[in-house]
Image 1 (tube, one colour):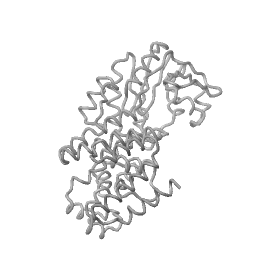
Image 2 (cartoon, rainbow, N blue to C red):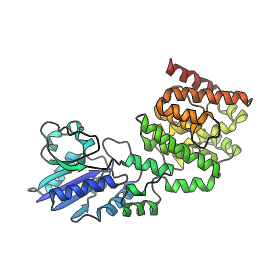
Image 3 (cartoon, rainbow, N blue to C red):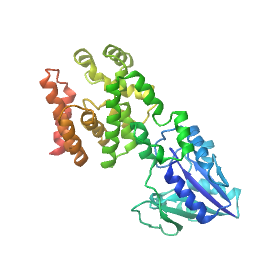
Image 4 (cartoon, rainbow, N blue to C red):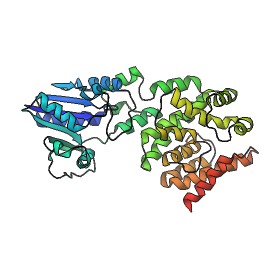
Length: 375
């Protein structure tokens, strides 16, 4: 008896997963296929969709494949489960079966770092190669390579598309797309809410920033999904007018720098910090880097992470911005993020001075920090 096990976050399942499993079934002709969504991947801090939603997506995905079952072994335990534990459970159920694990080529190089690699060597591995990948088998592992190359699709990129309103349906099987739409997952519900509460121009800016943030993150080695999510929610504080922002900031003790001076002299600057608080409380965002990017996208701060700098630049350089510097900043940011960050900080301060507005101390500190990055 051959048992094929396909585990992963499936956040969401996509055409790459489909092509990989289809090729594996044709190659191995297994008697049983188990698709096992993780509760929490050992290499991730969290997932975009809750476990119940991901289980439903995987069930929709699995219907195409015969003798295939969605196994909730990990989800029922409600904790991080390691592959050696999953294999032990499979051995208990089918003590005489050949156990095969299915994975993409990006997994192969990490196997030696997984928990209890000696247990992983007792199973066989089916590997599908992404474009440009090379087969490097860790010592002691039995690996069979599937023929062909598989779509260079990732759940991260798919989520970035959903958050920024870019086309996404062709990257997922139709049953999965229908369920994503029905449950309004991956920012679809948030986009609906923001569209109702923000002006059309502000919503166009929001989606433009989400798209550019995702693009810049991808170019500079950051998580495109996290960047696009930060872009989608970066102006959610603007659902409140300035008076309501000030009340919210005081009541919640939102950490607006120089809070009282800011709320008196330039209350609109509080929207970024209020937005981070709303992203956490209303939209359920927990990732510290994403929340920090939202909070600091307007004034910045010394010591900004790369993700924060991505959003800071995307906010001023998005395609909807009417001033001529925006196009030049976009081109520069694609080539050199830190140089674009410096130019963005200079442009913001120049605009403040030309308009005769208050020069916020944090904006000045950000400019000095940006200059230091280039020195």
